[in-house]
Length: 376
Image 1 (cartoon, rainbow, N blue to C red):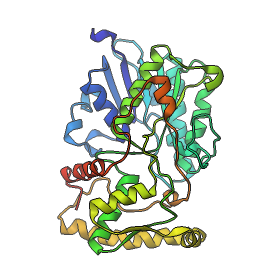
Image 2 (tube, one colour):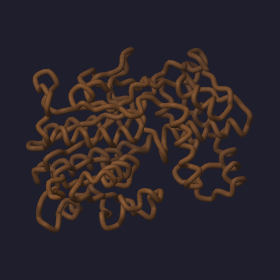
Image 3 (cartoon, rainbow, N blue to C red):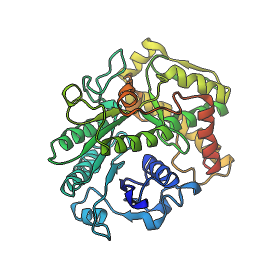
């Protein structure tokens, strides 16, 4: 019976995770109705063809969910019923923005939609957060471990987590993510791949700051979308195996693959895929760089942006999509992104289909860029 399936609202529905979640729900016929909300129009969102049906205009509302006056239009349904599941995939995902940007677009957005979801008695509200909220230690962080956010995104995501937890009547689940990669990914994995393409063209060695052991944990987008749905369904079915005494009143889950990805993992894969030498600056040189990180980052960007533009020009690419080798200073910290995802497996019974980043999965990412004519 279609009527028994949950209705789903995805805030930030055209973002990277939002669009894959929409497609997963659509292809597996999991929802009775789905609505995507985003401030970007589908025509401007670099949507690959396989997302056109899942993210079609009849399912889409253009709105800024951080604005109070937009909430009725976002949440109201023609039949007068309320949404069963609300996934908040929205918020500012760019690094190195001013605090005010995160305050409005991440924290403000989360609280606006969270309060509205509570008021309307939504059955499950899933807030996406980041593993960068944890205090980095030598062992992978579990959900109850010490918190010390180390990126601006994480500072405001943590505030959102804490404020949402105080909202009366909000059926909240928090999901903390590592670096999410997969086809069409921008940001972390894309930056490394674009840089590797430049070093390949220059015939030079690609060197990372710090050491091969710096942890940069990952999760594949397909596992992330499956996990988001699994968590919502688990919550809605009665939160089996959840012990509020030992685990806390609000369910929090790390979604992270089992590969314990570090810089060495990524360097090894990139070396193989591109046929280039890769290495590490080591602690001494890296510590010197730390004293002058702004100019180090500027130098790296100066070195790669020109050749990248040349590669695009030579390939006749005028619209490279979201890809760039531009390196964000916040991503060059010697801070471990290291998470333990076992709670999701033991409590929810989730199983990862892509338990580690591999050469084949990275080649799939590059292939997706080629299909979109983004890749030189």
